[in-house]
Amino acid sequence: MKKKLKQLNRKTNTEPRAKKVVPWALRFSPTAWAKLLYFRDKSENEIGGFGITPADDLLYVQDFITVKQKVTFVSVRFDDEAVANFFEDQVDLSRSPQQFARIWLHTHPGDCPRPSGTDDQTFARVFGGCDFAIMVIVARGNERYARISFNVGPGGQVLIPVQVDYTEPFEGSNHAQWDQEFKANVHEEVFQRTVSQSQQDIFGDDILPYDVMEELDQMDDHERQMYLEEMAQDLEYYGREEVELL
Image (cartoon, rainbow, N blue to C red; front, top):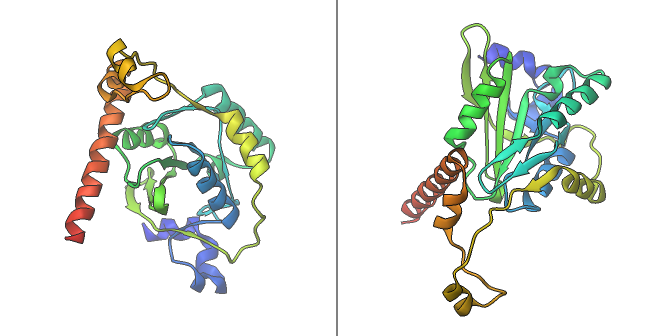
């Protein structure tokens, strides 16, 4: 396992600056990290995208790029055509799939970064045929989770740390451009819900009650399962925090 990580992160193991970073870590440029957090904080939904790396350092994320997607509090669905176009654009830039199609990044709107069962299933289904792949989740409060999977030879999976690497040159933030990308690619799926006359009489036209059960009923089976898994994980996470505080 360590031998494979060495091959992916050559710079971390051959240059003097390696002492400044954690061995085997997934490293982000400050600009890529800032963009990921900016997208996370613009929405109360999950946001997904891909990490872009240089050819000689596959564990260094230079950029975070999104594609057209439909999002909810518990899910991200990439548009198939948009993904195909993204792949074509990256190939036109002379990048190999290892540089743009191996690091799956997404955010969680809550404070728990651990993957749901659906996250694990998606990671295995979509990236299971790749030589290696990494799933990264960033939640509120900058809680983070990263797991690398090797799908050749004996295979295996291991958690790896995530850090921001300031030792490489990096560009500044570009909120105007990021706002344009967010508006073009991120589309929230809105669940329609009805309100009884008695509820409207009580709460008025401006403030209406949030009926969770009614929203669950309008979800399809897949979305409902994801939502319940996320709720269960958040409850487990906060329960653990309370026990630790006591």
